Length: 233
Image 1 (cartoon, one colour):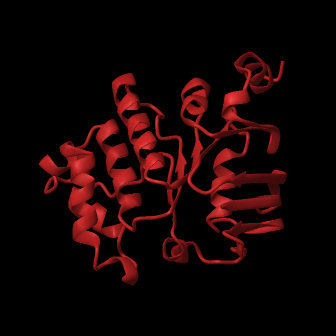
Image 2 (cartoon, rainbow, N blue to C red):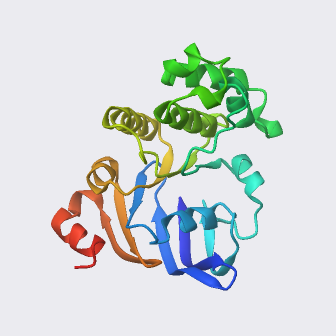
């Protein structure tokens, strides 16, 4: 369970999040949607300790995370798969994957996790010795997701995985999300594609201008009302 309570955060004198509260139940997929500039990515960064909290708190299974360094999060079972892939283009696919198991406690299982990544995304296995810079956008997203799974996390924060990808690749990625959810992982997904996000989610949050304006179980969401709020009608 992740509990974000009354969080204010931003960048220097510029505040982005205004008293944001969200919760992600264990084993569920919680999606956060909203237009550009709503504060979705900032919220994920605040949860991961990439930016400090001005107010409020973040808890993981009751443990307060405030002030926990980002590099310690994998040891607590939580990782973030960032927007824009952020792979190392001059390193091979397998070298990129191994970085996901860099922390001491995860190195012993790195070979097993690599094999699991190649099973999930066979294209990566076929090209494991190739430079990551030779990958297509969809393949790069597969690599980013696989790298995030190398520490076998219980909690995944995934930021805009479908951004800029062809529909056929997006279908494959959302199938992967459903598979990860079925394994019992807790997932927080930031996504702009409302229909896809709601379709895979258990709970939905809509953000506007750094605030949560809607919180509903996915099965109760009225898409017309959601889109009215999304576009601030």
